[in-house]
Length: 195
Ligand SMILES: [Zn+2]
Image (cartoon, rainbow, N blue to C red):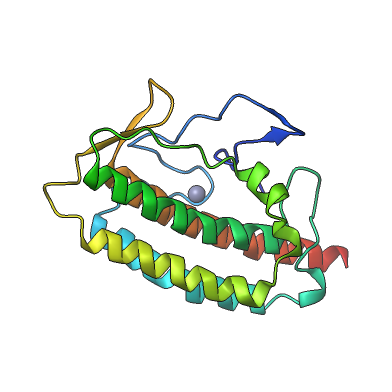
């Protein structure tokens, strides 16, 4: 089932809605069943390493004519999900770097739908973005390599009452990749049915 993902940060026109809450440290996804507490850092790294190839295979198995089709109002196209996953790994690279090097840094929200619109995700060069995803995921893994046992409980904040650990950043980034890989496959199936 295609869902509007809770971290999308819906923005209607130029009037931002209230930010949806971040997933908790003990989040269990009702769609892809990933459990944060059961996901070790090593397993998360394994997922993140495999995401660029799995996303490439998924996107290239969908006809390019439907990459920009949205199956329903409020959902994204294959191209938009792909750009989002690329941006997740660039954003989380900076977030993890800041978690390690700053004292309780306050993170900027991603504002996912604003990005999609302002940065014209749906007009992107999909083959180029597949390469950019390889680069941002590799960069994130390099930042994980610099993060040691003494860092995993370091804290970041977003809204004043939201704080999360460096460990959560890695689990969340792994979940984003896996969840949106499913979204890309499901969106591809839906728009091929409609074509
Ligand atoms: Zn999920």
